[in-house]
Structure formats: structure tokens, C-alpha cells
Image (cartoon, rainbow over all chains, first blue to last red; front, side, top):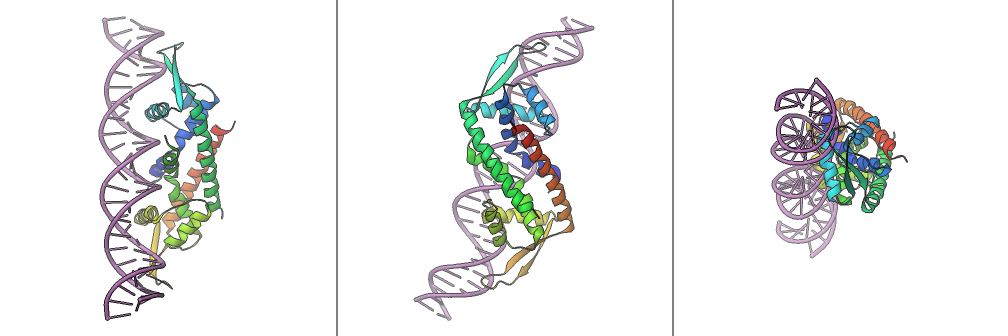
Length: 108
Length: 108
DNA sequence: AAAAAATACATAGCTTTGCAATGTGATATG
DNA sequence: CATATCACATTGCAAAGCTATGTATTTTTT
């Protein structure tokens, strides 16, 4: 048991929820997502984000379109699908229940 | 992406935190831990709990002693070590930060 | 006394996600 | 044309939760 490791484990499943939360607010491309995550206190590298975005898109929860960049190569802007919104609501419920359970146990 | 799977992923790292929270309240054996988890809304099977308890003990965060049972085989009563308490406090901080980050992102 | 049931503990293999390091490609700049 | 910047992508590794199954001890039933 090492804190770094357990912190990584705690992020499993939750990064997905957060990414969906950011994208459902409005279309975004990876760099913006990384910035918003950082602003919230969650540091994510591209090597973590890209595979996750790909998984979500392949699962039908997200879709994207290429947009020319004002500086540099074109960007992939991600947005949510109706399936993604439905899944997000389920995750939100799951998260609420989890937080409530942990609060119950850690209150003392 | 399937809800059951993501729910399992979300539990990674968090079950450990919860188990430590239960044990630091007072010495307990596995069956009691399972009951308290269930009461809080977290369902854990023995096949999940035993390996976790073993990992925590091997990491020096928990210790145990055998106690005769009033009915059935002897039981392993687990309690926390000073290292475990210190680690728990760190996990508590990590959890607070995680919950805060998720709240920030999901508020809308 | 032996068999069955209940209680308690344990293990192995599988699946999946986050992580780190590295790589590729498109565009802008020198 | 070469270099730098920006954007996207991939691979292999480590680790934890889960499921199913197994072992052992004690109690109860036959």
C-alpha cells in the first residue's frame, strides 16, 4: 500500500465520470479538458486522456468533429451523445450513492 | 462502457478506505465488516474482502488476533496499527480532495 | 461415531483502467 | 528546408475488484 498507488486506484472509473461532466457542459477538445480538470484539482496527462476519450467514443457516449485550429494542427472537438447523457446520469447516481456510503462509514 | 463495470472501477481504492474506516472504529472480524459495509450501502463479498484485508495486513496497516467463536471456528479480529491510522488520515485527505474536485466539475 | 450443516478463512485467474513513456503527424516559425 | 510547437495516438505495465471455487474448524443432526 502506497499512497500514490491508492490515489491512482481511486481515480479509476472517476476520471470517466469527470470527463463526461466536462463535455456535457459544452463541446471541448483535449487540451481544454486537461485545463478544466487541472482547475478542479485533477491532474491528467494526455497519455491518460486520449485512450479514455477513445473508449468513450467507441462506446457511443461521445462523438467528435475536426475543427481547424487558429494555431497548429486541427483539433478534435468532443461532444456528448444522447446515450452519453443517459449514462452520465446513471454515473452521477452511482457517485452520489458511493459518496454517501463513504460518508456514513467515515463519520466519527 | 457498462455501468456495472464502471461501478466496480469506482470502488477501486475506495473499498480500502472504507475497510480502514470501519476497523479504526473498533476491532472487527470479516463478517462484521461485511455487515457494516452493507449497512452503509456497499455490498462486499468475502472473496473481495479477504484479499484486501491480507494486503492491508501485509502492508503493516492492520494486525489481527485469533479469538474463539461462540459458535463455529475461531475468528480473525482485525485492528489498526499506528501506521494504519497515519495512512488512513492521508486517504481521508485524498478522498476529500477527490470529492471536491468531482463536485466542482459536476456542479451545473 | 459418523455425516451433514454452518461458520470462517483463503486462493486463482480474469477483466479493466489509469499511468508513463514514447511515437507520429500537421502546422507555424526561423 | 530545418526546427519548434501543437495535437493526437499507442503500448505495455501494474494493480485492485470480482467471481467461483476450495479448505478448515466447529456445531448439529442422524
